[in-house]
Amino acid sequence: MLRLLSQLIEQALAYWGLIALLFAAVGWLTGDVGYGAIAGFSGLALLWLLLWAPNPCGAATRVGKSCRNNARGILRGCHLQQHKWQRMRTFFVRPRLKNCVRQLFATPVTGLASLVGIATLVSTLTSTILSALPNK
Ligand SMILES: [Zn+2]
Image (tube, rainbow, N blue to C red; front, side, top):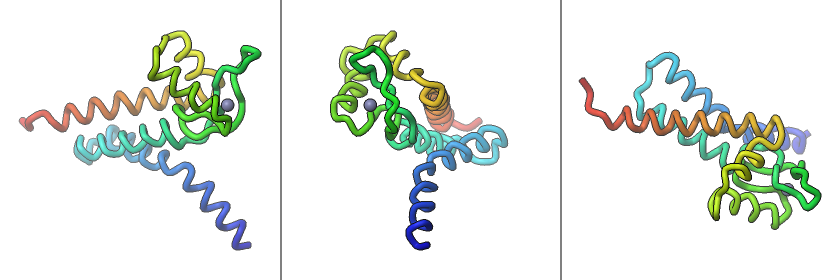
């Protein structure tokens, strides 16, 4: 029973970024919180998506398909060390648009995570700029 409870808590904690994403979305929709708070929640959600969000690995395999192992974050690969480096290299060392798009949208789940990641990046940048502007 205790083990089941700890597994449930562990699985719920894997999705903490969705709460930050929800707060950021509610902040944009209602306008009740300041741009600084929206930037904070968007930034947390972006970090979660890049480093912790559960999704398929998506790294290109030797047979030309994408890896379907479970991974954490868009930037991190699965348990295979080569896939971890491959994901980082794709985005930071000689990034090519075709390779980036292929790995970001390898599966529908990875594509959804990538789209939300792009939206949170735009939200973070926009709210940071708006919070830095002087008030009227
Ligand atoms: Zn992999």
